[in-house]
Length: 145
Length: 104
Image 1 (cartoon, chains in turn yellow, cyan):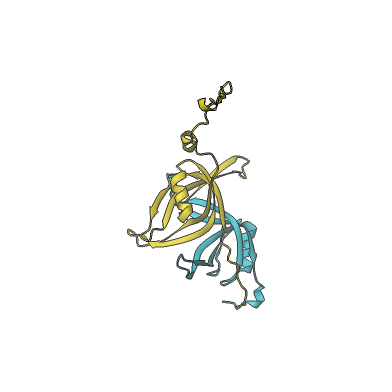
Image 2 (cartoon, one colour; image 1 turned 90 degrees about the vertical axis):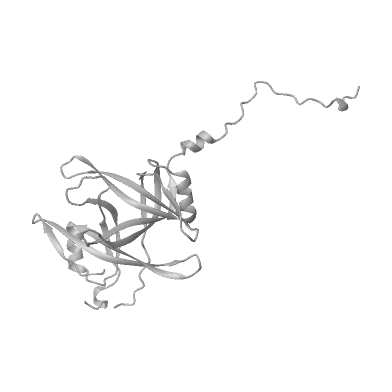
């Protein structure tokens, strides 16, 4: 085998909409994790000349601060962009005994692509500007006569 | 690459090849230990890329893959979300010279 140093490259970037509300949980160690479902659509022109659309459904896991952000701020249907790496999971099907594999994304960056309407609704509105300037009353003791 | 390749020709014209690969990286745990994690995946290639892979890649070959994730439905199930995620390759590059590698 050659002595090549393989680059540690496992990067994925996806933009799509959340298919369910994020589930924020805490491990016994207190580490937060958040599981989400993401749908990523892609439009393309097929060999028949027609427009087609395919959708990728994938599970995403975020950890620590990113997990808490997702659990607090994100909801089903919101558009987000994520960066992370692929993670494989292998298990045995209890009914058939067959080996099953699945891919998920471990997100290290998650960003919402719209403004949180709930946040905007809760933000206090700035006080209305008075139509005429209000003069501060002068304390009685300061009047020289 | 974790296994040698098997090519398939669909409809007698369209070449298809699955490229099994493993990707390692080191990660640091909260208590400061460094652990190695490995992602095992299968990359799907079609047409010219599939033919190139079948001709040039063998088990152990270091490769750089670019592509996109695709949702493949299992069987006839049209249920939303029911299926398998696969990696569809748009570009693949060999990272060494084949003659420097031990053939397996």
